[in-house]
Length: 389
Image (cartoon, rainbow, N blue to C red; front, side, top):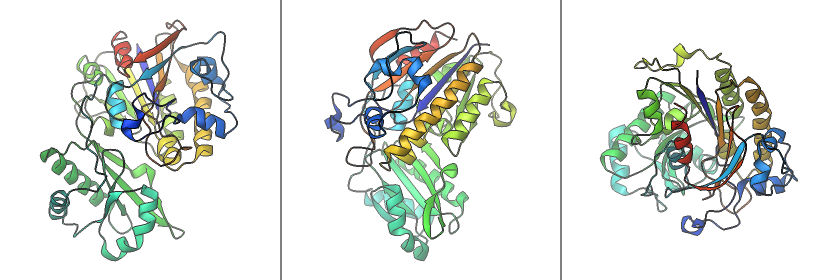
């Protein structure tokens, strides 16, 4: 059985893209380098052995004379710095036109249509905001009115936050589905609608990560569709299913944390996942080729956006510990890709994503370790995948 494993360390960029200022970022942004500096180095022996320290100077990550993997720097072709754009390009789809953003909030006609079709009565916020800050600020109004908190960011997102002890989770999901349909019908070109459920725990509004859902635009044809069409398996772990709006996915399982995503990835590599329980109803594949596609979101969601460089560093170290187990369980024909989708530097001003280059590490028994240098396009990963099936 031939298998490929893609692990995306969400937002672990390694330096500003040349056009970073066009996206509101400063040349000093470098998520991994700055996280390493903040933490006085990181303990990541597996990533180090794979050649991460050979790509660039990262404090505490040494260069190695005999790396066990291929290593490279990837420059994004697409016009964006968000999860959807990055993942789609990894899967071979380059987005030439940037998704729409709403720095002044959403237009009145869109809000009116959303309120009418959901019957929610009204909305709160309608502005760019940090998700944790906006629910703290408006939770009291939310409790009084039961209106959803609708906000955006520097990214192309329509985010809906509710206290699920007040508004049922199922209602939140229905409102998100309605928003997705309205946005698509109106050709607003919004990348994602995001359900942001929270609860008030010990008096503090707290987001419930495991119940988050992303409702993405449906991508055009990607390498995932190619694998599915030849009868292979595409196992999405974490928010992969949402990022691709189920297109090209055959099996999927959501996660509430990086640890859960890493555990499930390890189980998948060990052939211990209960695949029938997570298979789509239309899956009828017969080809042995399998793609295990994992998104590890905590680096971005919990630490990058919250300017928590210490937590970010600890999350990378946790990933490294699991990589040691994953590498040991890989078969002779397996190929592992470790990469990122954009940046989210917790040490620079702001809480938004940063337009960055990303690292790529490729490991497998059949992979000859070498420096691949600088490569234009995250879609290089899709090209490599096609050579495996």
